[in-house]
Image (cartoon, rainbow, N blue to C red; front, side, top):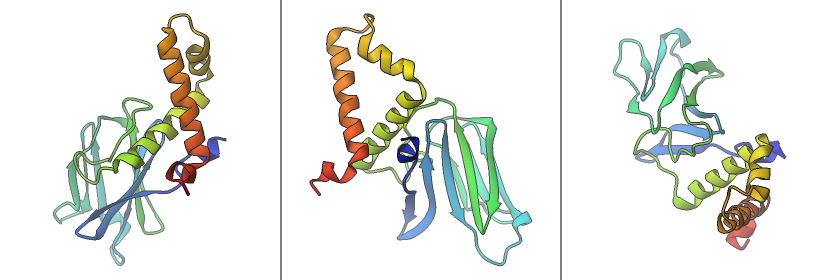
Length: 171
């Protein structure tokens, strides 16, 4: 089932109708994908990842991207690579499980429906990875009865939506 919970497709960030980058996320990381211009040697590309900022460009030129990230990242485990003409930037989330609406602060935010689907997918992935959360929600005496029922109902709805995404749209 984990394969079904992995990102099924990338989200595109467009500016003036042109793709700037694509991205997806897991519980632990946000991945950005930037198509690189042809004919430029890969050793000239650079990427700087800071706890709250990312900068991408070609040495000797103004940066292509120079933005704050939506949420803090772990710089010691964030990295970038280039493969097949694409830069892949992996931003390690400081808060595991937090749903990001975009990698870049205030830019290219997911629409409310897509953001809800991302949140449900990540919640299901987290419950799958940490079975103790499921048992806590279903049987813990620490949770009030109303909260237990609300968690159980939300989870059941999330499972149904992820397993049958078109049914939520009436398709």
